Length: 315
Image 1 (cartoon, rainbow, N blue to C red):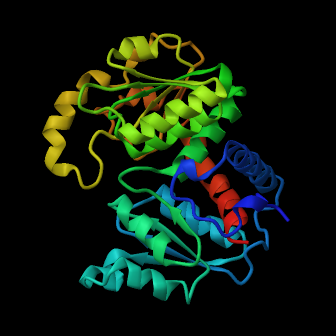
Image 2: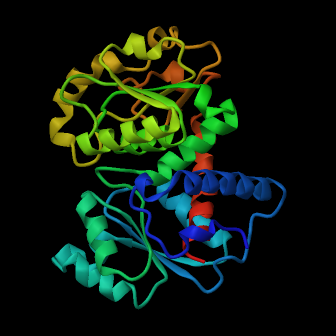
């Protein structure tokens, strides 16, 4: 059986729900899934008879498609449920939805505005709940990111990884936890007022102390970019933050990833972005379309890591 045995039946709400060995095992399994995919074994019968509910409060391209394809290629079925299609839209408590769905399906994947919605789903459901993005974390994205970095740069522990923009970003939070857990070094280059969540940063520092990694908050983007192996950014204005748009663009402008900033990185650096990208805001067209861009490999790896997660948790 292809899976990480210890994860069977567990929730995945945060990267912190994994041990270091479980995180490494999931990445290894993701590479196995990719190898099988390219060797002509796209379809596995691992989830035969399993049904996964996908609750989406936010729009999505990569997350929705990668998850639905992953379930299908593993032999299961998925139900896409927008918030408007559920009684949640009419005020039904999340705990009621959780206790009903657990009687119909084998797992719940949720993409939500509030992280509290995920924790409540997990509290009241006896089936696994997987975080497909909240305002606090995006663990599935971090899994694909780490896989991509290892695939293209090999030993993560020898790299300088730099994230530019909003340090409170959900992707930054999960990436920070994953990198430090595995002994890597990550610079979060962000202005005052945009620092990562205090508890998540504290945990990342603890992981770094245990693994020999580092996490640094840096105001100067040039300092973060110097000799970087990986340059990463995300959108400045996420869904639900539209009323802050003007302020965010003003505050984060000097953290734009452009030709000047990347000139300080190593010549063979890779550029990463979880997408969708707002070209001309957090990143310029020439950078995302450059030979250093790894965003399409990164996007593809969402499929392989999703298969690894489902095969481990839902079997």
